[in-house]
Length: 194
Image (cartoon, rainbow, N blue to C red; front, side, top):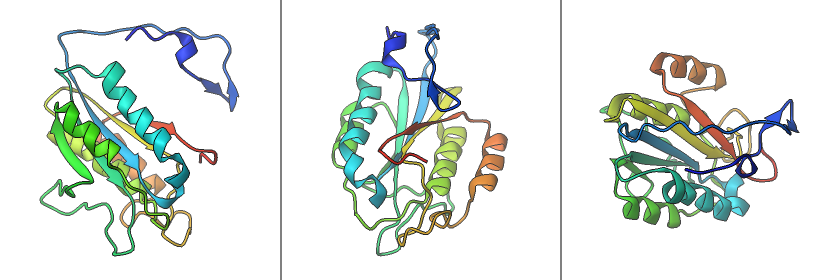
């Protein structure tokens, strides 16, 4: 609400775009359902504060009390815990995920309590799918969106790229997203964004 072009960085072919406009289009009578998909894998260890700040800003500046949101934090832990895509869907991990609500206090507490295991893997594609499927199946508003905050690397605990997700890879999750018809926006965080 009330953001100007100086509040954004727009890249075109990898370089900052100099001239662009921001136009606000808000229907105050229409709510939105947002799924925040937050990367808490080991590669985000140095960027946890930026992740918390970015996620909290969504609640402080954008979402209204009439909107709802859900949170999925994702990582592959040493005990094998990862993104649960089991049926009945969605299986939510207490303390790491929460379904749709407009209880901002609870959502902010979850965000502030996020902890990073330095050795945790990154099941990025599985988490994106879970967020989009939740938005498609569970949201009460017709306007639905998934916002992914990550450094962008799908990797297992040993750092093997493209091995973090156990069900989806890049191509298969894109195919699923087209079927689910839920927009997904990514926010790159960290010094080594992929």
